[in-house]
Each structure stands twice: as C-alpha cells, then as structure tokens.
Length: 474
Image (tube, rainbow, N blue to C red):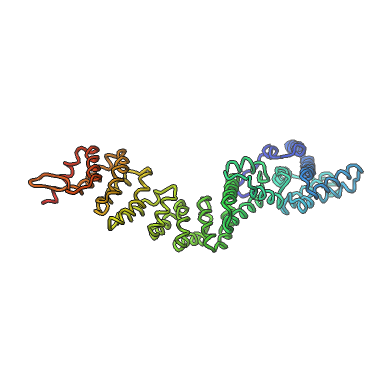
C-alpha cells in the first residue's frame, strides 16, 4: 500500500480475484474474519494462495512452459500416490518456486506471503507455539494477510516478472500492434499482464520504451507503435506513470548525445506532454541548446515539432528567424500549421527591395497563407505591409493575389479591415487642382480592378482617403 492510499474494502479485494476457486476460499476467509473466527480466516487465505499458485502453474503449462509442465506433472503424481511427505514439501517451497521459477511474485511479496504461511501453521497446529496457550491472531493481522494475498498474487494473471515483460515487448514489436492508443488498450493491454500490474512491471515497460524512443533510430512504423504503447500505459497508470517518468527520464536523457537522439527527444516531448515536467533542468537545457545550435537541415524537420511544445515555442521562434528564405519557405509548405510561421514570413515579405525579389517573396511568403483561415488581424497586417512598400503594391503578381484572394477573404471582416484598405487605396491616389482626388497615372489593369473592388466593398472609401490625404497637403 502506498502512502496516502485508502483502506481497501474487503468486498473490493474479493472482486479483484481472478480464479473462481481462489475467490471461493477468499470469500470464506472474509466471512470468517467478519465472524471473528480469525484463525479460520488465516487458514482459508493460505488455501486460496496455494490453489491460486497451482492454477497459475496449470495455465502456464497450457502455453507450453517447460517448467510449468514439470510442476503440474509433480503435483499430479503427488496426488495419485497420496504422497503426504511430498505434499508437505511442495507446500513449504511453493512460494520460493513461484518467485524463482515463474517470477509470479517479488522477493518482498514472497516475504509477506511467507508470514501468512507461518501464521497459518500457528493457527492449524497449536502445538507449534504452546500446549497451554493457543495462538490468537488479531483482526488487523488477518486483514493485512487478506490484502497482501490479493495484491501480491490473487489479482494478477499467471505471467509476471521477466516473462510478463518479455510478452508485452513482443506484442509491441509485432507488426500487428496498433498505432492508436485506444486500440492498443482494448486489443492488447486490457487483456495482458499490464492489468493490475506490479509497479516494477510498469516501471520496466515505461523505461525500456523510453530508452528505445530516445536512444535508437527506429523505423517510423515501430516508433508509432511504441509511442502508442507508452501512451496506453500512461492511460492505465497515470499517477504511477508520472512518478516513474520523473525518476527514470532524467537518467535516460543523460545518454542523449547525438543530433539524432536530440531530435528524438523533441519528438518525445511533443508526444508525451507530461515529459517536460519530468525532464529536469539538464534535459531541458539540452533541448534548448539543440534548437539554438542544431544544423539547419535538421531544424527544418524539427522546428514544427518544437513549436508544438509550449515550453520550447519561444526558443523555436528565435531559431526560425535565423533560417534562410528557402528553408523557411520549405517549412511553410510542409507544415500542416503554417500559421506558426506567419509573423516571420510577413516580416521577410515586407522587406522586399525589388520587383524581382517581390515575385519570389510573394510566392514563398504570401501565397501559401491565402489558402488558410486568416484572422482579421492577419489580413490587416498583410495589407499594411504591402501598403508600406512600393516594390510590393506596384508588383502585378502581388496585386493580382490581393484582388483574387485577399480581398474576398476580408469580406468576413469588413469593419475590422476597413482602415487598412483605406490606407492601401490611398497609395494609388493623388490630388489635381483645385482639390480633385484621382487615381495615379499609369496604373496597370490589375491595380485598377482591385481599386474598383475596394470601392464596391467600401462605398465611402474616396471621402475617407480624402480625409487622410488632406492634412498632409497642408
């Protein structure tokens, strides 16, 4: 029982038992406990343990386990020959056999159950203590024995320890293991040794999967399977999993050294959100340093991952600013969330210094965003950036995109974007004496068409532009 765990109800313990025969003896033990027949309760609890171990041996024998087959043969021979000496020896050694041969219990659990066996002998054989004084166990002791029997043995499937761990890993390594967490739970883990697993088994599974995911360069399909398995374990044992991760992850990350392993770390942090809090300061520093100094070609692949990690987003944006135009454009094209790069892209686009550069930058840093759901603020920023640079608003390709894509997008935000469109319209206007506002001479057809569309969307645009320009004339 862990610190802070509530006192477990006896009926709940009974429901945890797997084997019907063991459950029947445990029910008898609980009934004796409630009736105050404590010696009988201890004896029945021990009988439940013995029958459970025999049942587990038979289950393992059905799987072809050689050691289990020999144990079942010995039990059947003992029964057929009515060999009392062999039966007593078998019962004395059954716990050691369960631990050493089958890893069904741990060393500590063996000690707990050995105390039950000792108390069972005291209850069944009064002469072992004193001819004059009978053994009188307390109710608290009986309850503890019942609890230990269930938690250590009766609630678990017949595979634990190393064999359970190996069977779980073999399932995960299989090509048929799903990459979806819900399917991993329902098709595998809900029917595996992970059900009511011991803390050591949970720890081993989490630690080994984490080592594989961080330290090895896995094929994509295997990586997805192992992440699904790891997330499924956390789904089953959230509190225990967090505790294990806090203990094990900092130690494992000490071995993360290469760029490939550091990239694995970022993917791990993105996929397992609670990992950042378990990582520790040295591990966090490694992740940040990798973002700052990792090779550009690797950053093109890893920055989308880092941007999805809240704690690393600021560092990722800083690294984003150092990428070449081509690398940033590649990120925008390949990422399903291009909005992450909007600010960086807009800044580069607004600084175009020639028509030739405008053609390239518009293709790289404006066009991709016009097929996304832009906000009113983003549309406003695009209009303002263009209005501030003649290399953009006098470039035919930019104007054509404004007419065919940006203005229609802004129809959903007419009021919010109105001021920006008025300022943009003003760039194409001039005054003729005495005070006539006209469009600049020499506008291309696309510019004329765009201005006509702006007038249709904002019928009062010309008076508004007049108000903007008039103070500057004086």
